[in-house]
Length: 220
Image (cartoon, rainbow, N blue to C red; front, side, top):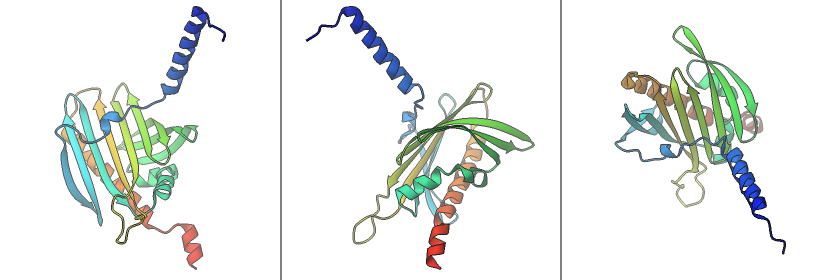
């Protein structure tokens, strides 16, 4: 067995550290978004005809935490594909007027959105990481405004149909965190965030409920 010199061991260690740093450089930390949150408020709501579970936490020190949990009437793979179809972002999300990809791969995207707020149009650039078909993590940061992070988790529905077997549904939870860079009225931000998330949830569930073009053709 060849014995490696001490200096060689040092270089191997440095290479391992460098490789680990490169692998983790793009990781978006969203572990603090997993439930439950300290002092959270939980409410059961209805958005249109859809029941949802809403969670929130407002803290001047830690920021604004919001989450919505609901059940989509499709299997996880189909829901994953619809959730990653960014061509619908503009239609489903209030204020979004344009969507551009600056970087795109199976597990990472950099997406630029034009968002109209009142009379102004803002350009927001999001980093998105994916672990198909389980999680989507995203981050947006701006020195003037603050930082947003989000985590969307897809699980097989815990409620199987009568008789056992797969329910053919997917439980989804979308959680977000916003830490403004300057003092702002968090109560007002909470209202805006709740409206936006619940409206996006309704649009997404409406899209899941519509038959795809393939199923329409096959039924004719």
